[in-house]
Length: 303
Length: 223
Image (cartoon, rainbow over all chains, first blue to last red; front, top):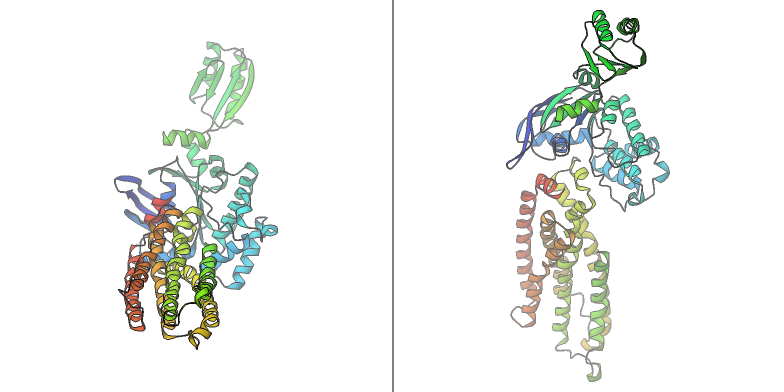
């Protein structure tokens, strides 16, 4: 659905994004993670034909980003939820959506149906006649998402959709994105929220001007060395270390009264190790599986 | 914005006829020989209104979107630059024009009521007022809207956009002063020439506004 090759954007002497190459399949939720100023918003703006690219090529469906004739076609088939919701405060929730439906040349019937569908889906139907300016932050964000969907776009770009929302509102928005995922929409999600990215995204790209890594959340975590097991002992001695090293070829790290072993399979490998420890006179306090988190991956990648 | 669109026409349509009604009242009112010149001068106020009133709305048009932070989703829709500028211009054009036409109707009716006895005939409608209302007023409004939209696309805040947009009244005020001191006569021929000049500037500003409208610059420098 989206195919970027060597996408670059420079503002005068400043390079905002450089050499981005990625492919996003139809129906995929692709997350862009990166620190402030990494170029996430600039990338979305280029993909939405809001700003020009300095170099590289991007295609969305069969259309080329940067080609003037294709720009209008691309804008017709995408929806954008910007980081600032940008609603018309004096218009009601319904009027905001209706106005945008007209800009997207939706028929009156389609506008009516979609406005009702999305407002009900987002729990805003009761507020349809309320001025947008008086809605809570969470409601405004949900309304901005409904606005981006009013013309049923194939691709949805979301720039920090849960930023500045309270946990409950964030959850509602996240759940809604998961609902959209079921509808096989392609979603490009810019976010700071690692937990959100892990829960929602099929694949994640970590960006810091350049695209540093891309993969599924699982692949990214495995890139840090995979799962480890931590065995906490009451007391520790050399006999225990020798006994453990006799029964395993995995890497063993020793830290105070802990053994950290590069082995993921607790069911098969760990019982043997535990038996060896006990035979050597060791007393075990706890056994814990250590999973690398996306935060570990992110921090290591953007360092 | 709405206040100025209502207040100005109200003052012109009722205030000026009252001036005619009560000026020199103790000496039998304004003399019939001077009255037509006074009424023509008052008619020019509708041109001033058409040059000034749309600027309040037009200068807010794009910079206002910036203030509301609504420009990015708007520009992401499949509308062309020309459609966006045209939409903004129509929104700024219609309310003042309607207000001016209604107030002109009230003005002419009141003036006829107050001057019929002195002049012996109804002064309005006449050719001069016809040219003013049907030609000069819409063309002046379009000119000030074009200029205001260009200013609005470059201004960083609403206030400076409105102040700069309001300056559009100055060339028209200069013509008015010139007519008052006798340098220019606002007869039908001269009003046609003024209209042609305004039309020329309308066309020039339209091309400037569409050629210089830069979505990227507006987005990246405003947000």
